[in-house]
Image 1 (tube, one colour):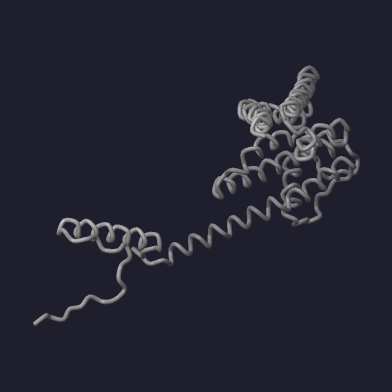
Image 2 (cartoon, helix red, strand yellow):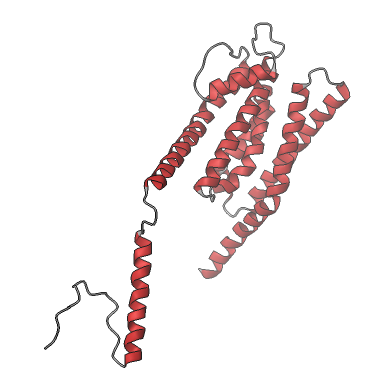
Length: 268
């Protein structure tokens, strides 16, 4: 049994080492991926040569992410469980093959960061969620602009308009002044609505929790002792009484402090 556990643990350790080694390179690759995706959208009149370079870079980086997923799959001990627990990674890699879902490749930039978010503290996690929400808004604006630009009835024709639409959509405000007309744009809107609900809820909840903590700290009187401070003080007093008793040659007193008041009556 022990040898089987060791054998089962070795592939998982290799998988963790692989994910640790590739985390930062994949993060930089994700940033570069966003750049080659955004450049042709933000500059529609760019030269065809550079547009082709961006397209080739897009495909190559997507291929690297595919290879990285296969490598993690091969390193995992239970491959069926790996596919089942990493279904989001697989869907992000497969679905963008379809042209209307091409913008989903941008989620590779978030997929790498999600590996480390589970072990972060509340403060770091809140900062991560705020940054992720902002990144999703920026990427959704790029995706909907790519989908809507050139459509005859589209009212989203510039990146500022796309950003305004993304903010209104993720916050569920929905003014209705801007809306997608194409199938690809509506799929982006659907993904933004579903994914944005949880992120906005966590962000507002974290902000409310931080405000309550600040108010609680400000209302607490200065110098007020907490239970931990009182327990530490009692522990130090017990040690001091034991040391004094040993110096006098008497047996040390029990560690618990007596609750009765000291007897101040004089002996006659």
